[in-house]
Length: 297
Image 1 (spheres, rainbow, N blue to C red):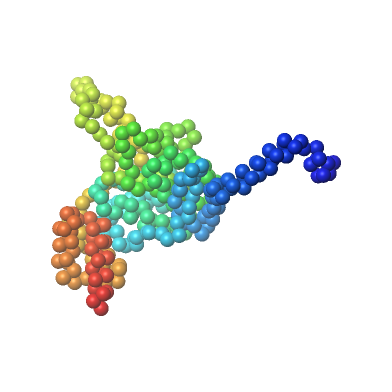
Image 2 (spheres, rainbow, N blue to C red):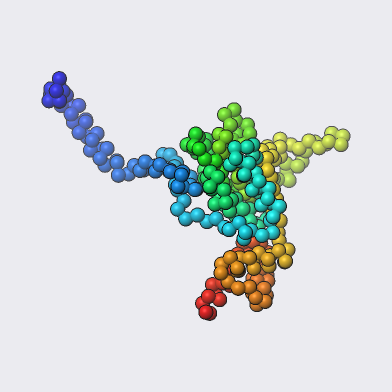
């Protein structure tokens, strides 16, 4: 039976319905999201998870923001521990998920990002996921399963408020789900909170004391258990004045400037005006200082 005979057998009502369906699809097609791009991990070092109206996708990051390894000063112990753990990971050896907590601006996220170009030739790749998108963690992991690279799922400034459910898939992925994570996936997170979730005074009232033992309430146990599932848990602390000045000098030199006594005095004034001493503040001062000196020249 040829096409003419098939068309002849279509009823007028069905022909009208098909015509209207084609018109509807023609109008709908421009509004549909394009198919997600295929990621070529051989040439792509990092992606960002994007959430769409129907499904999410991995968007390659063209311009990486990875600070130089040598510029991370004052956190030598943390650098050594995290680098060793990630070297184990890219070598196919057992490695722990990483949680970095502590003072803001002290190099937590910079440390994770600086390891990407350092270990990229060994097969390290990175996927940045916002806290609110952790509900899609199973889809993200499924999309990279079987790839010959080692992936760090990186979440910055991780914390949860009361009633948020995004922590549950993260908790299950870390340790609790029957399926578990793929062997080529490691989770690294940073947070200013030690226990990731808010703690209230009322939760301490249900704590039981049996003899010399302390038994926290169920709410407290629930919140602490999320942090406990990260095997490598490191803390960051505020820098003293000498450490702050050393970091500021390092960034000035890294940005192509020259360190002088006037720079030292202005760096201290800068920290006083910002109300603290941190690596972030030191880098911001160095950027301003080198830029102003460049204009003078």
